[in-house]
Amino acid sequence: MIDTATPLGAEAATPLIELDRATVCRGIEPVLREVSLRIDAGRHTAILGPNGCGKSTFVKLINRELYPVARAGEPAVRVLGQTRWDVFALREQLGLVAPDLQRDLLMAPGLIAEDAVVCGYFASQRLPPYREVTLGMRERARAALADADAAHLTQRPLASLSTGEARRVLIARALVHRPRALLLDEPTTGLDIAAQQRFLATLRRLAQAGTTLVLVTHHVEEIVAEIERVVLLRDGRVFADGTPAQVLTAGRMSALYGIPLDVERTADGYRLLTATPVPSFSAATAD
Image 1: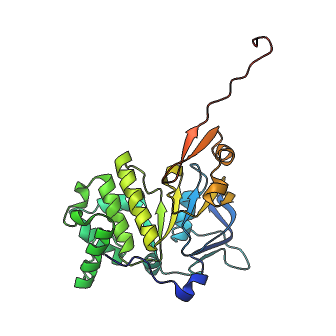
Image 2: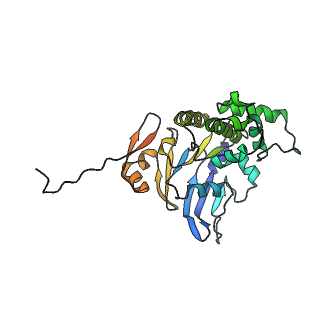
Image 3: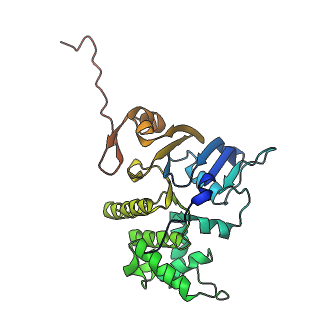
């Protein structure tokens, strides 16, 4: 089994992610609005909110696909203590699992699962012909596939896999560098119920083994029992921040999504239920 957790040691004091009044605009409209947030290594965290709240912008900000509005003073974004990153070096420390990346890999003709994982060394969608692929890389790729419950898929073409199988290959690709954390963007999108459950079981095992999870989602059901902190986003701002028990309440969820909701605690986490409206009775109809 691959050692997915990098020993933290003295590095534990350096936050994985720090946002200091970060604002991100699409066109002239702000999508994230002066968000301040610190996520520490070793503390599994979920970023939860409805569509349009700024979750995808948060992922692209951390992954260096978007940049904050420039301002004087302290930098608005630090990742692992640094304000400047080579994107390739960043992905060695913070593995990304996102449906968009899976879509891009599926466009590579004939790409098998093992090669898709090896491509993670080069942050590419194909094996670059001018770079050496070592035996050690292939051994690490196969170990990462085993850790993602995908060892049986090693020689299968990526295009022949189900969405759930391909998503497990994507986890292996993110793990091949032994990153300090996984940044998961809506990771169960497109999965059926059975595939969702297998995927979430894999996440739980990785969390228990020491890989920090930063889960970005609008599905409460994805917040597995190992998640220790939940941050709610609404209209590009932090709406609530605390433990799951503090944040995942009927009142907060109803306010977040704008409809009456109940929250049910399950053996593995939480789920949202539509609250039954309380009927109103007038004096004329009451006995």
